[in-house]
Length: 142
Image (tube, rainbow, N blue to C red; front, side):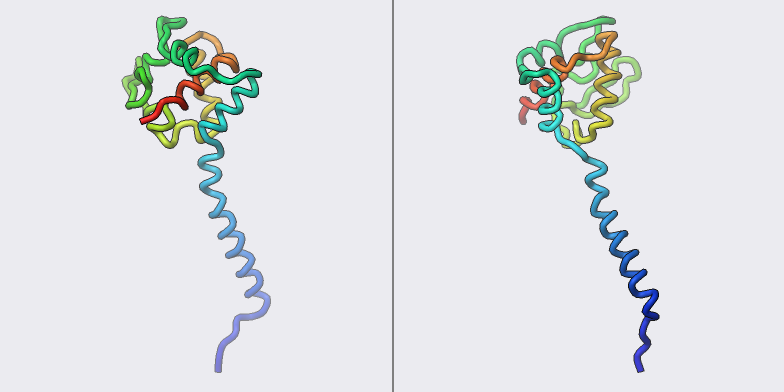
């Protein structure tokens, strides 16, 4: 004699397992909702022009307000670990080809552009500056 599951529980259990399976499939998408190429396209669109690699390199290395540059913390070129100028904390490479996690979460990209631009420039970066910086960072290859 075989024991069967009560009919009311079987569909509910199947539905719960299916929901769990579908939810778990979405987890990686939540952790990485974008890419460096998508961020470059986003800033190009906002700037109304394609980012310029050379302008991005000059901007990255150049000193701005507070005598800081992007390279003060991120190294020049930003292909190796950097170190925060005041805390000494390790910063992963900024160039996407050297750090697969770089520019993969839109919320973090926006947060760090806002914070770092204010630290370095004493203002937010313009869309054109972000476009140029992204063009430079994406151009760096191993």
